[in-house]
Length: 77
Image 1 (spheres, rainbow, N blue to C red):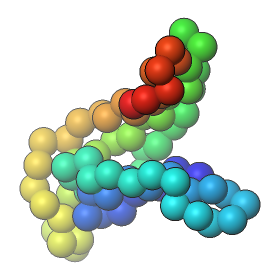
Image 2: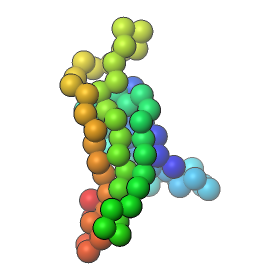
Image 3: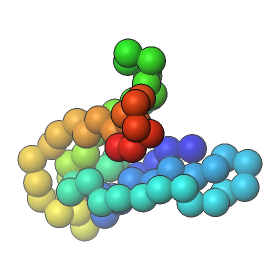
Image 4: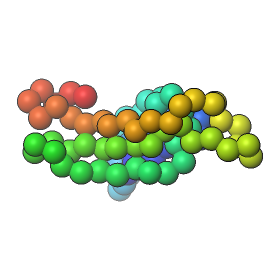
């Protein structure tokens, strides 16, 4: 399971157990826009970061799309 928060933190959890598998700050609030897809045989996850609104206490940054994924050869990000 993939999700983020308005503090800019992005997480990957095991959907069955709830165990945190990975997490990282992406430099801007995440207010949705998470998709996953396959490119050249490797899974990718694209995240919209930079969400801001006067109601939410978010860091003001330039919005961006962050693409995460495993390198198919080495198994690293």
